[in-house]
Length: 297
Image (cartoon, rainbow, N blue to C red; front, top):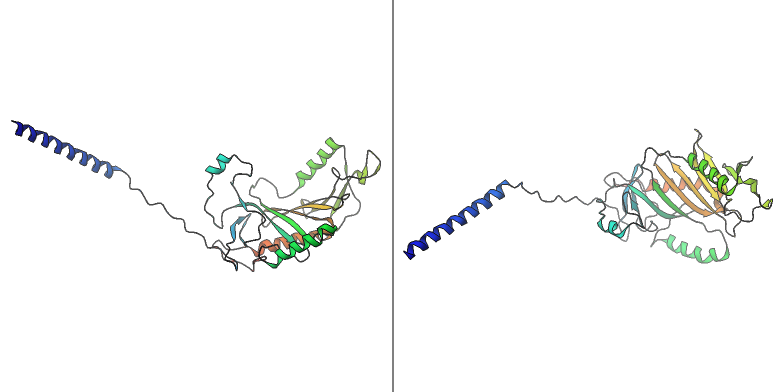
């Protein structure tokens, strides 16, 4: 009797195990086949003589490869969290894989006005920059380096001109500071000049002693009347500086430049040279250089 009972239990256990195995087999057959994660191939990237890789992406309408050691800081891509974004947002953010189509929002570099070169670490320009810092700035001599920031423009609804910006600036100046910007009769270096109250402080009826709210504004329009260059310059400081902005339609970019006012006569040359620098960084979508890179170590 005991033997028969054990036999029955054994048969039940075997049947149960068979059902479990059959169920698992059915479950596995019914599940969709998982595909292995596709590995996106790394794009080809140019290198300098030290083996450092270029920064790559698409600036406005052009794919570019920026030589290593040129960028002052780092390049920001569209979608990257801001510097002051919530740390939790930064921790969760994953930038898309780098490619020559990844839109660049902005980056900066140093441009030498005297010869159109750029600062690159581990190149002669690094030593030149340090030398100029020591021998020119302490003695109040004009510093031949300009700080450049480049911004890709991707919103088709935003016009590539400063028309609205200038109108709003003049309006705010009048409403808040009671300052009228008056167009001057004579252009300066091909620029239309506007001076705050014709250069006279309304409180003293004398020339401005402080230009904090009264900097000179200089504009350049294209053939259709759109303002493409906007420059604001100090004129009462120990060292007078200019903040210079311009648009480029071919690249769909806005460029900011900061430099000593001594170099204002070269404003057109600066715009042209900066575009030449960017052109030298252009590549095909596969990363092939289309010219000799300016600034490569």
